[in-house]
Length: 307
Image (tube, rainbow, N blue to C red; front, top):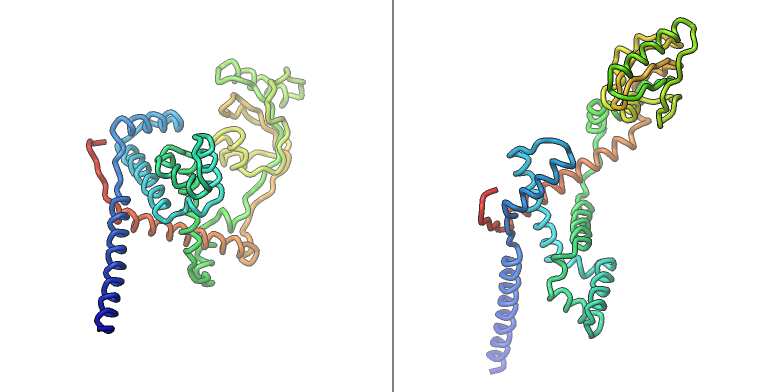
């Protein structure tokens, strides 16, 4: 009889565990459901993106925006399933402030559970962003691959000239003539003629970044004056000689070289640490992308209309 009771008790415990597991899996099944953004929502996102980036919207970009919105919803839900909102003090304090604002009574745990039950997390953009960051950091922290081999680092060295190469640098003086007009260009041409003829030219316009620039790379120069401001043809100019006019996004400029510092290859050993960090970031990126791909397969998507 004792054995029978024990057996029944054991079976009851096992059945309870199984039912709890099934209920937990079903609960997660219901939670892992995504709703497609509507056409109106996608139109709004597309208009905002086009305005910010000043580029025409395409069907491919619309699909990318849709996928990004779906992924953000998925990351948020997954972070909730993992309970990250209950273990982050920043989020907990924000939930408690919400509870205090709403006049919710009870202890700390009761207040948090009440706020969660009211669904306030879904509309709190700060918490949403925080949870997505926590999820990403957790996944990346778990992506610990082996140390890179010497061959892998040397391949990165060869494939990344931005790291392995020291760029050329330029020091120069400039005179600025404001406006994208023929008059501004004519003023610059007249000033160039005066300068090369040994005469004192008329005053130039004020350029907010200044007149003298010391040891800048071509990329840094283009960052100040606009893309393609510093073409390779400038390498043929002589030191101490005014030339131009050169067009920027602001107007026209006369340039006088003062010094040129040629670039060259950096020693492999000198950039080894930087290459190792680059390798680690690439492994983390791949790990995160693999996680996202796997996670997408675990979610059901409900769409009511076409994008």
